Image 1: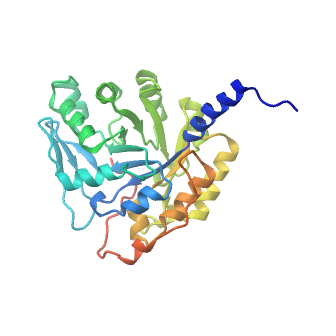
Image 2: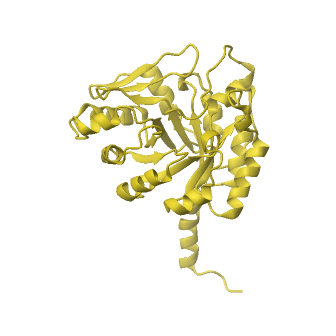
Image 3: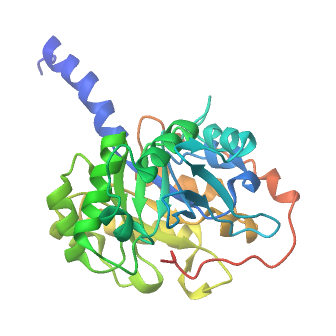
Length: 316
């Protein structure tokens, strides 16, 4: 048996970590981030966090909408400036802060007002919507905008918006559950370098989705999402063992981009374990930043009360 050449060894040393790092371990953040358990989110092994509830109003200002009792909707960008306050800014930035395993932070939004704003005044760099997304990216240290359009499916305006956020420096991802042709059109026009991730809903309306079929038709790696145990639509909830079984079965049929969960709100509401869910992903989709962790779920001892509205699925 011959020893590998120096060139081969160097190649493996450089390429293998990059290959492993491509595994995505995602979690959607439905709860007000000011009230989420940041330590559990950042230390369990998730490397991608997607903040749900960001929306654009008619004049191009950006809101962060609350889904949490005791929290309020917050105007976060207006007139090309970040206006969401230091406490929210610091909490969001801490998701990728020192010691965090999260390396990519996205904001998830629907299509409301996008078609109108892309028509007038348009996506130019002097417009309110452009300047607001630029300000929010800087303030929150964001990496991507996540498309959660479940109503409009208008290709021209979505492409214009995707190119706009790309010009600002964002990546553009999507969280589909149906209408694959819409996402094929987007990927074709935006390109894989900009539209780089597809988080596929495999629960509720997307319960019958096969990520390998979507992957073949999109020509891109897909990240299947499962819904954690919940009391909104319990039949779609998956405990860690069930999630492991489903993810493993898909993975056995072909390589995926990773996997993830909807959502952290239910993990905390239902008194579940971040680490048990994360370790499913750490085991099945390891990467250079992943390490199986022994759970410290002491955060669950400080529970909050009140009936929480959990989304039946990612609402449009």
